Image (cartoon, rainbow, N blue to C red; front, side, top):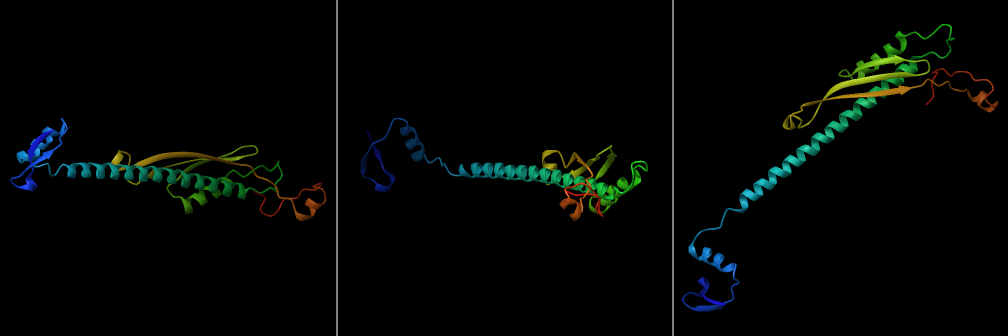
Length: 182
């Protein structure tokens, strides 16, 4: 307990309870050293952290969406390649290699000109390995303005059953006009 002169009471003395650690602070207030402006750097620092966090989340979302876009384009290219196969050809005729590859390339030329694809025809499957360099929003802030992505898509051609053969117990399977069913 100590007697301190209170600035708001003028010349009168007041009994003020002061803890041991607070006595120094009280002295600083009376000495005239202003404690103003210490909040401004804290607020600026928090805003910088918040802006960096927002930019990081935006960049991560942009990278994720670029990967999804590439996967959709690769799936579409494989579907176009499978759709170009003619199931009515006999196995003795073989598959025209240029037909499915040309269909996949045409699909990507229209929908994803920035995507490179390698289409592979297997015995029962059609696969594509697609890649591109996707621009990332705020990527330059983190040292990566673009991100290289590579995805793979595989599909199998399936013969459609006509409505009459489905009710006949599936004994005779004839291909539909498209040659694929998903």
